[in-house]
Amino acid sequence: MSDTKQQNSRRDFLKTGSLALGSFFIVPRHVLGKGFIAPSDKLNIAAIGAGGKGTSDIINAYNNGTSNVVALCDVDFARTKTAFDKFPNAKKYRDFRVMLDEMRSDIDAVTISTPDHFHAYAAMQCMQMGKHVYVQKPLTHNIAEARLLTNAARKYKVVTQMGNQGSSNPAQNVAVKWFEEGKIGNVHTVNIWTNRPVWPQGIPVPTDKPPLVESMSPKDWDTWVGPAQWVDYHPLYHPFKWRGWWNFGTGALGDIGCHTIDSAFRILGLGYPTEVECSVGAVFIKDWTPEYIPEGCPPSSHVEIKFPATKKNKSPMKMIWMDGGIRPMHPDLIPANEAISNDGGANGIILTGTKGIMTIGMYGNDPKIYLNSGERIEMPKTTTEVKSLPEYGHQVSWTEACKAGYDSKAHKALTSSFDYSGPLTETVLMGNLAIRSYMLRKKNERGNFDFYGRNKLIWNGADMKITNLEDANQFVGREYRQGWKIADL
Image 1 (cartoon, rainbow, N blue to C red):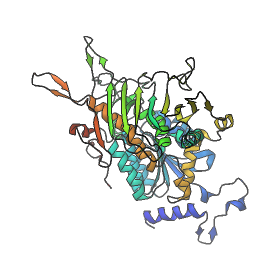
Image 2 (tube, rainbow, N blue to C red):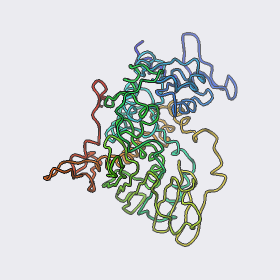
Image 3 (cartoon, rainbow, N blue to C red):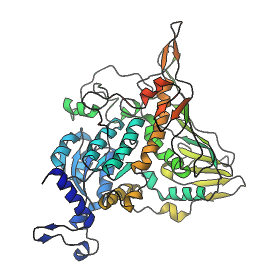
Image 4 (tube, helix red, strand yellow):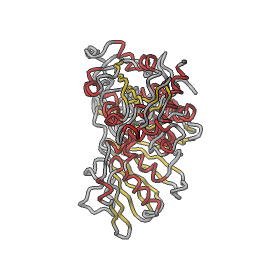
C-alpha cells in the first residue's frame, strides 16, 4: 500500500472507530467498558521541539493516554529529559525531516514548539503530508508566512490550532458576551501592555565564537538555524535568548501579543488593520549617544495600529501596544489604589468604549467592567475557578478535533484554528513591521544618516503591502537560507 493510501486508511480508521483487519475486528469502546479508550480512538502524535514549551504541549496533547506519543524530535537532547522520561517508547530524532520520512505512515498529528523562525517551515512540511498541526505562538515569523499557513490549512484540509492557550479560557466567552450585550458600548481605543522583554534586547550583535554546547553537533546547529540566515552558535541565541533577534524571534510582540491582542481581536471581531505607526526605545553603547540595533528587537516600543469599524464594533478604533515596562496611565474609572490589571499592572488590556471600560488580564483572565455610571461588573466566582484540564484543554480540544476530521464541528469549534489565528498573527506582526521600518536609514546630502521609516505606514491587507513606503515591504516576508525555502502553495 502506498504512503498516501496508508494515511487515508488510518484517517478513516480514526473517524469510524472500527476497522476490519482480515478476520479480526477492533472491539468497540462500549464493549470494553466505561472509561476505556479503544486503540481505534487514539491519535498518533509527534513533537517537533520537545524541550521548553514543547514539553508541556506534547504532555497536554497526550492527556494521560488518550493519544499516543510515537516520536519526539529536538536538536538539543539536553533540554528534553522530561519528555524523554515521560515517553520512553517514543522514537527519538534530531531532524524532523528524517522523522517525517521514516514515520510518515505512523504519525497523524504534530505539535510544533520551536523558535519562531522555524514554525512555518516545519508546519508546511507537515501539512503537505496531511498531518494535523498544533503550532506554538506566534504562528509564524512574519506576515507572509501567516497568510501562507492559513491558506495551506484550507488547501490540505488539516486540523490546526495555534498555541495561545488563553483563547480557550472560558473567561473569554464572558468578555465577548458582555461586549455583545452592549455593556461598554462601541470601543474606540484598546490599550495593551507587557513587562516583556525578560530576555536581552537592544544589545550589540555578538562577535565572539564560543564553542558549541556538547549536546549539539555542528549538523544539529545547522538544523537549528534552518531557514534563517546563517550565524555561528552563541548562547545569546540558544536556548532561550533567540527571542530578541529578528533572525529567529519576534520580540515582545511575538511572545505575548498572541495572548493579549487575542482578547481584543476576538471581542471586537477585528480584521486587517489599515495603518500602523510606532516609536522605539534606543540603547546607549558609547558616549551616551542613542543607537538602534537593526538586527535586534528594541528594549521597548510603543505601537499604534488602526482598524476600521466592524460588524461587531460600529466605530473605527486604535490599538495601542506598549512593551519594555511602558504602560498606559491609570483610567479615572478605576479606583486610584487599585491595580489596572490582575497581576499588579505588569501586563494587561483595557478596552475603552462609549459607556465604560473593560479590563482583561493575561490569557483572557479576570475580565472586569467599570461603567461611566459608576457600576462595576466582575466575573462570577464559579466561572473563574473551574479549570478541569491544563491550559483550558487547548491541546486536548485539538486532538479531539483531529480525530473528528477537518469538516467536523469539533474543528470548527476550535478557538485558534489557523482561520482565526492566521489573521490574528498578521496583526501582531504588523507591529513588528513598523518597528523594523522605524530603524531604516540612509545617507542624506550632507553625508549624515536620516531615519526615513518613521512615518505612519498605510497597509493594504488584502495585498499584504505597505502602500506609502516601499522599503518597508521587505519586512512582510523574509529571505530564506539556501536549501530552506518554504514551498509555495
